Length: 345
Ligand code: NAP
Ligand code: G4F
Image (cartoon, rainbow, N blue to C red; front, side, top):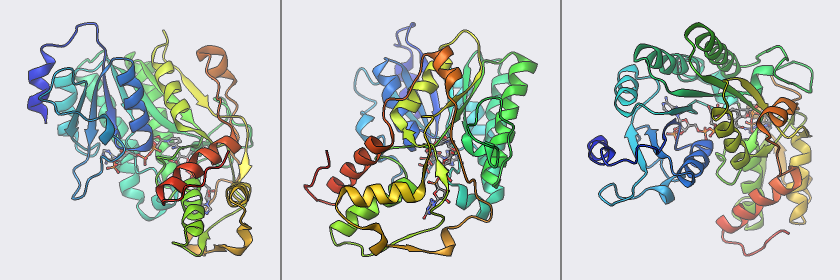
């Protein structure tokens, strides 16, 4: 892949910005790549090697690198592999680095704590060290998370102390704090975007919202008869992913690097999400939802609700898509996916 990049890189318009995205194949990475390509960036995405295709979320963006005008370049790499990260960053020398790669599933982080900490925390440290060692002038975005707040009382803001409740959250706290240290100690332009839950039709199918909308669609299409869930009482501040990746980009355009909470300011319980999704297609969720203990976490985050006033004031960012619209967007996409012609307005 890389030799194609070298060949075409020479012809690049000097004013064109270069971005490097880890986690480009994920939900956010795919929306961010779309946004940056629309803004005429040259986008470099790091992709993990896997035995089956893991690029479905970005296949629509990919073009044959032999053709003219190609702006998306993919490179094999992994945030646990310092050597490759070093070589890629040294060669690409991006203006902006977006670190989105992570083992991002909170429940799974209890099963894979060492791997989670390695990708989430040490992965971030590897990138920051490469920037420092190569004296890159790249700006750095870190995908920090509202999970870091854990038990802290809502609404949570940039000033709320972190009380992590999972290996994932503890790793995100370390990564976030390293970003602050590298910003202060070495003058690296590094931002921590503390994003609350954000969802979309591209959300992984084992996260709550997508599991529910796909489950409802499958039940309606008679492809599934029950939906097994865990804790129905937890509350989350759920927003729409494409709006959240725009906030990432906005942080990176400011004069001064800083941390920002990105959220909707509204919170809803898992049971409210479930009731609404089933209700929109005329089903009573109580007939289909069963509780399975295996989906509970050893420690839960009960109540997340973000205060995004700093982002509103300094970035001019605010969310447009709210809870009910989000559920409809995801449900309509999954109804179509399972082959149903029903559309919820
Ligand atoms: P996601 O869909 O799970 O995507 C994670 C990405 O990281 C995927 O591209 C994955 O590659 C890649 N990845 C995993 N391990 C890797 C490794 N060792 N080396 C290189 N790449 C690796 O997550 P998301 O929802 O887009 O979230 C993006 C980032 O924001 C994550 O860091 C997440 O923790 C954080 N975050 C998310 C939310 C949210 O609500 N979505 C909120 C706050 C923070 P594969 O495709 O090959 O698996
Ligand atoms: O969809 P979830 O797995 O998301 P969670 O744990 O809030 O984490 C997500 O948001 C974080 C931001 O705060 C990100 F940093 C993180 O990477 C990820 O994107 O679970 C949401 C809630 C939890 O309280 C969970 O216990 O739904 C509850 N839940 C109930 N039944 C379930 C299920 N979650 C999942 N995944 N599967 C269930 O069956």
